[in-house]
View 1: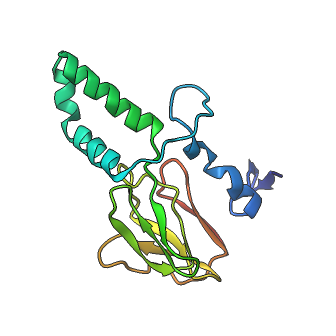
View 2: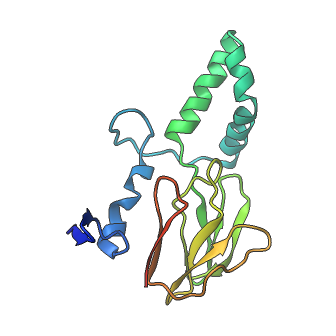
Length: 170
């Protein structure tokens, strides 16, 4: 990818098609302290239920030193580092939405494309980029869903670490 000089800084053009190609690549592999090429495991709904239950009791598990607590903590760490908690696209070739690993419908099947590169269990964003097939906009994940911008952007890319900034190409 060709980097560009933008106002005295060298930057990657992440709103371009080439820039988007690898921007979220790190989300496809185990999250461990070293470079890892192991692909994430796609969880079942049962996995999601167990994981959410372990998240609820996590603090209690650290207080206990018994064998069962250590076993549950190991399972929790495996869920946190080896499983893919991103939502899946639902719908068909015409209209898509988002479904979380728990089975919750995050967005209805009414868009041409939706952004799905976020943790739907631990880091659900407030806004998600959606496309009508011609342009991109932001929609809230609240209930009811609110279209926050018009469909006017060529690309909307949430910043990959904090996800509170959006890179827009227009």
